[in-house]
Amino acid sequence: MDKKYPQNEDEICDYLKMARTTNDFYIVQGLISNLFYNKTSKDVDELLLKKSNFYIHAFENIFSNSNFMEALNKVLEQFRYFKKNSGQKYGTSKEFWGTFNDLEIENKKIIFAALITSVSFLSNIFLNLKRNNAIFVAEKLQDSMNKVKNIFGAKFSPTEISQALLSVFDRRFYSKAIFPVRIENFDYLYKQQKISNYLISLTIKLSLKNNLLNSLFKKVESDRLNGKFSTLSIYRISNFIKREINIEQYYVKEIDSLFGTGSLLCDFVERFKNDKNEENALQLIKITLDEFKSKEKKEEDLMRTINKAGIIIQNLESYGAEKFKAFSGEVVGGDFEWSNKILINCSKLLGVLSIMPKVKDKSWRIDVCVREFADWVSSIHKILNKYDIDDDWDKISRYLNQETNRVEWKSTFMTPTQIKKDSAGYQTASKKTFYGIIKTLLGMINSDGGIILIGLVENYQDIVRDDMKEDILEKKGKVFFDVSKELSINDMNLDSIKRKIQDSLKKETLITVDSFNNLWSIEPVIIKAEDGSKEVVIYKIEISKSEKIIPSAKIEGGSEEDISIDYNKSENIWVSVLKRADARTIRVDPRKYLTS
Image (cartoon, rainbow, N blue to C red; front, side, top):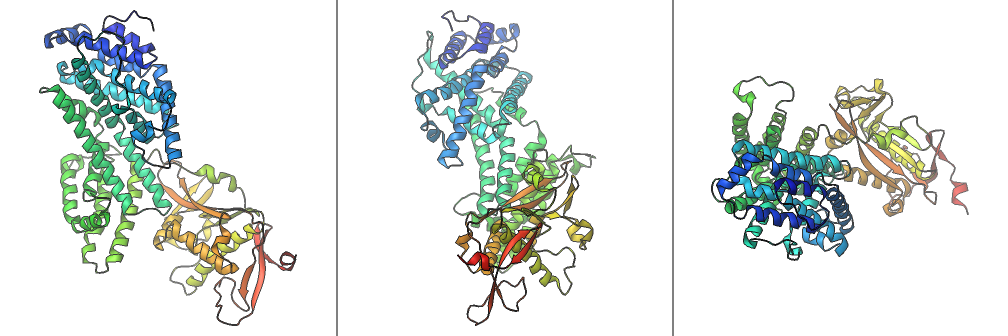
């Protein structure tokens, strides 16, 4: 840009449309500081009467600046690369900073300078705004942040956007700015920079807070499906909410101290919380998890939550009575107050916890409570992410045409579909159901590999158990059973079903579990109803072909599904090989595979 700098507010706003470098944004900061340094409050009032909304046009022009957006895209890509290669879920800004060279760091400097510049006008005139103007500014700032989310949301998560943006605000990593224009008063400039820093940081936090909470529940739900849920998962949610609230309070306190009295900051902040459902959801979750305060003492926090469950329920009821129209007798239809579903689920959880102090078996009590929290997380996740729950249909769609030598469908892991639970042969049928999976898995290992889908029901009409029918979802002509429910009923998760499969393979083949490393894997697959009203979880087992045939071993005269062998008894053991042929698993003569 040339040396003929803009002289007034409108020219500065136009200048921001094409600013390219860190220096360009520092020029604007200096020019704005000089414009307002000697202005009295009366002067600012007169300016606001003459020229309306120039302080809004400033940040709108920056968030429309293609150079800024290009630099932001690079910073987001750098942040993702940093997270992927550092192996850390949460990198500090200092760690992020130190990962890149000077050229890459320049992008962060541009974002840093541009974000502060975007609210430099605002920091100078904020105290002179009327209440309605302050609320309008907050609305427009939120619109600008929504624009960032809309542009980058398909490629980057809200967590990545928030962390990458806020990571550029650590001033320790910046050399002292050299301003290309003469500055009237550096103390005044630095004070306004500081206010602008806090204002835009607060804006980012407030704009993305609910998206971050939703993303966190999505991540914890994924951990639950993968058997990784624990008291640490509960602490993470509680800690996130407390941290976000503390950071918000810190920014407000710092801005208030710099502005002095008469700040409209409270109205400004409240505008970001205009969606009462989202704010209610956050507060209800906070109340429910309020006793989780220490990562090191999370089990003690769980026990304290159990013991105080009755009090927490009362706190939820008090909050509901104050915030929800339904409590006052007003009729609320549809999803107008969808956050009342959060209240109901929190109350259900605490209702169960409230009876736990009477349980004598401490280990059982903790296990039950952790499972209840896991189910609670799943319920809250479905409410918060109702319109954004990922469907894994693409992961299985290619395997839904028909069963082949490389594709097999199983309704459940161990739940017979054609016999009632109280029937005499139920346990035997259950063992046979599970063994069918082991048999197919080993047959595919000895053939060409393949896919087993657990939860795809081939003959829905043959299901005789009404309780199973409640956990069925039909989509695109296929019927799916919620296998995660089956595992939960049997006190199992992904890790425990993996161990059960590993142990069964070991007993079937008389070789070590390590022999099956890298030959099979299992993952949960979410199937969502097309209207988003329901979802189930099935499981996909992916199998690779073994370089060597792995035979099966059976006791002479034993049943096929009895895969336990007593090594201390002298019994005849028959060896066979399981293979896939004609879309089924068969036993073949092992001799041609076992001779050199």
